[in-house]
Length: 535
Image (tube, rainbow, N blue to C red; front, side, top):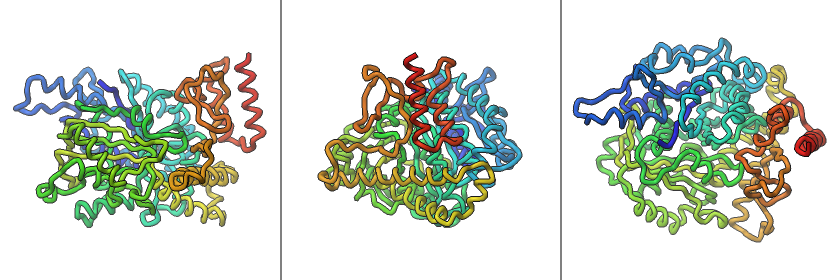
């Protein structure tokens, strides 16, 4: 067993994605809407044991033989969760895993963060704790939400600091739906997205970038559908999640756990945003007349028209820092290696000179499974590709520009200030976003013109977290640059605690969120930390 995964769905968008995800996983693992395993008449006698092994990643079997999802569904108002409670899968979920309130986030990050966060902390933490205690080897947590709403942005950020401190060694993947110019539901979505992405309480995670505009385009072009509902879009996202986690759930030639993906995809803490492509995405008629090869899969996954986030930069012109190629079906390691070499030779995969072998391979022998209503055909071979490349700055730039135009006019500021935000937080989020874009520009400029960078140049400068000073002998590795080091733990802050057992770095981040604005106060806090360590 490679470990369990807890899935957390927040806000209206997240809960609707949950419906699609658990619909797919029940079909994939042979579980009925009531949580009971479905055994086919022609199944061998050992099929029960195999199904239990396979579904243990996402499901927990209780004493009555019912499989319950390892999940928490959280929303600030009851409407969407009431649909789950009365829907087809009403008997699948544990009632304590469905957490809701009676007032919504009003599409306001500040309302979710400052007003709703504290009231939802206790029930959410208690529900998450019980699910985690039932896991034998928790591999990671996956979050699904929209960055444009008040609940998915503000409320989740208010809870993330506790999650980060409680699950230090587990990988965390963030499936975020970001706003796009053509597909928006609120004028203030750019505010919510940038404030959440730059929040001082944001946990260390691997962030997958999605937007509705690109998802609709892929479905329209690949599946020839004109009337596209949110259910269809959510089923495509569920398919991506299923492809990513197949290595943990089924027998694998080359495993790719969530922790492995994090180690191989994130070269610097601030450069955590990934683009995603999947292949093949086609209907059954197209699949019947198409030959699926490894070479074709990787070229299709690298096709700009197959990306689930829009960028003004093409992948063929971008610089790849790392990527993960997760295959399913009848695929051999030799075929995969040959196809990757061919893509590199044809310069479809142009890696940074400091990361010449920047890819992670996963091969799962179990072919993909689909839900018939999704319109996606189940191919005997498939590929989910995750890219950490400079093209992601095109996704971020569009949101940054929208945010800047609103901020310059101070439009809609009063709604955020009324809920408890300070005006300086808008400027801090702007600077954080600007520095991140500059980091991606620096990576690309150094690749195109090595003379443009000094020998000591390092990337990830937009990582503004406070790293406590540690004895060099306790340091595993250091990032070249001015006094930035990573001590002997996954998070530097969580390994340093005061005499009461409280996280010092957590205290610093909380202080920063509530009003620590200048560097003098930061230096004083760091000096306090040094004194405590000396004592």
